[in-house]
Image 1 (cartoon, helix red, strand yellow):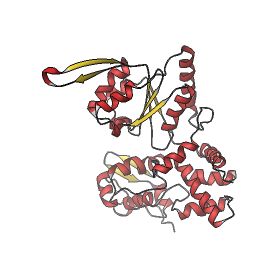
Image 2 (cartoon, rainbow, N blue to C red):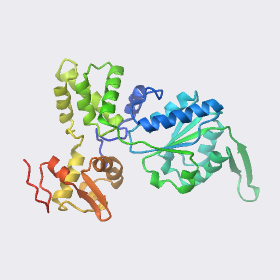
Image 3 (tube, rainbow, N blue to C red):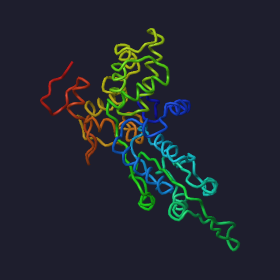
Image 4 (cartoon, helix red, strand yellow):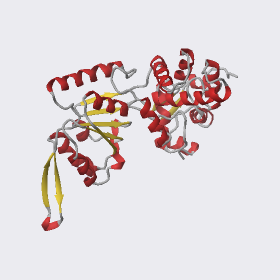
Length: 341
């Protein structure tokens, strides 16, 4: 069963989405991190504005919470366009998408989150819209069926996905640009925390911001979430000012250790080491042992553990690393490592 995790890259509550929107940068100059992506995107936007054209269709992919939605809003703002936002699971009928497409104005941005979850019917319906800016709509059935060709105004589709490999080749090929968003450096997250603290009117110094950044799993959404927990802790347990010691205590109270791991991360590593002798073990077996959904482990837990080298993904299954065992003060079976306590 899925649990609400403070270190999850996905929004935990609808209210968090609203608060995240208030912290979201509106221009590329305000956007922190992803320097190479920013440079490429700046060239794309400047060229489109010089030619007075719409931006090419853009696909953004990477783990949740890294700023895919933020970049879609920035593209719309920089182009002076309106952004219409929806998601793959929300588009169930062609009529739903037809209504959205026909109401788009010249240069508008259509943002589809979780685009890998579009149904095959919707996916095929959107192909001519992306290529030729028209849709074929079938009216009536049987002998009375008619195909109405509806022209569309030129728009830009920005798709976001955490699983680019699940996109069909025909859909992927219709995007002119692909941008991968990677985990952020701690220094960039520190800047993001300081900026968010200023917007939230929360007193914090650079060292405290770095403490939060180092436990944020390379993800801005998590950094902002941890900042709010530290702000609350400082208000209740201190004088409202976030100090490094107070920030560390606040995050330890939330179960977030200095590496940004929470109880589910630590439990997964412990199970691989204790139950499965360090691995390899299949993801299905891990999900059953943890009573978690496979998608939760693959999308929310594994990416960061793979990034920092605490687990390895092999053809035979998942394996825990020596560094992971050391972090938890455990001995990895089959090694000469001493148990650390």
